[in-house]
Image (tube, rainbow, N blue to C red; front, top):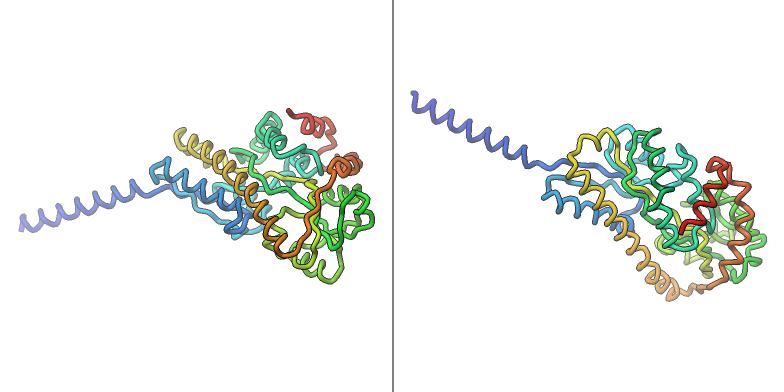
Length: 329
């Protein structure tokens, strides 16, 4: 009897020990929500982020991705990170600007000279100041703000070779005063249309043009109904990699370091994928009969600057902030 009891007890000890060992090796799961669709260069960067974190924590931390707005639109995603229903998110500056207005300066046309200039702005003191304000007011930490959306250009049903060619052109605008006033300053007639309706609007002539990064134009098939793509390069925007601060404070310094470094590397990887993909998308659209037009962007920029006083209130009316962005070296 005692022998049988001993065997049972030994079995229980071994079973419980195995269960405890399994529990100890079970990875911590960090949920990350994002807008970018599966396969998009930004999504590729997030996949890279998950791989780096798994590798550097010896698979003790697992990043679970929710791309393509699976958990709701970007304002919903940002709120989920804020309340902690997900731990992390990749959120656009326009959404952050709903609560910290200064982020809206990112959507001023031609405020950046080029990609390098934009990266210097969002790796420097301006980014740190806005990140600190976001943390203090929202309880959300910014790991970095370097994830590019892609350079925006004008796709039209007729050639746009000079800024004067935009005069009276009916062009689709997102529901944003910064976009709307910027396009008006360029001489166009902006019309707010939902993104999902742009293809039909171009097809039916409701608008004559739209503007977007090349990857969105191609994957949305807008080039099928408008055949002239003018490389205006009027805007590039950033997304920020965010983490709930209460959750962040539960992490060990080693894991915090891994997330910080991996997030930066993954953002750089995504930006490289976007840059490399632009040439590929241009080639594909040219093969589909799209004419690409290079222009003197300085003339476009000069006209766009007329909108700045009209929209400064959107980022708090601080003209010094806009000047700091433009003068960042």
